[in-house]
Length: 86
Image 1 (spheres, rainbow, N blue to C red):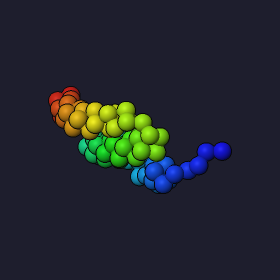
Image 2: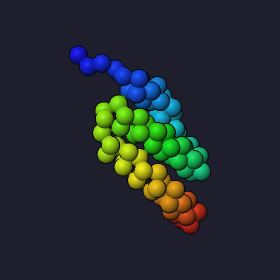
Image 3: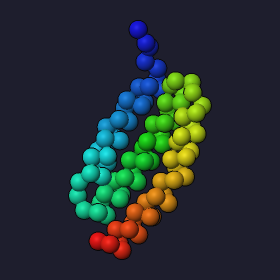
Image 4: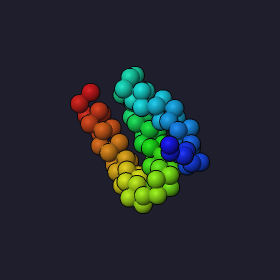
């Protein structure tokens, strides 16, 4: 039986904080969806870093860094798309 560490407990505690903006990103107006997607990505960054400590895998930090670097440009591209064609 696996032992739940404090790091994994923190990931589980952040799951509702990730689920709420993820659900909001699927509903609502376009601007609200963009903000919710940005917030969900920020929470996902924190969760990936915590998971790297929980599972002792440094590659998760690389994923978190890549997500952090690509979230803002991706959101700006989506905002430009929404402004232009909607």
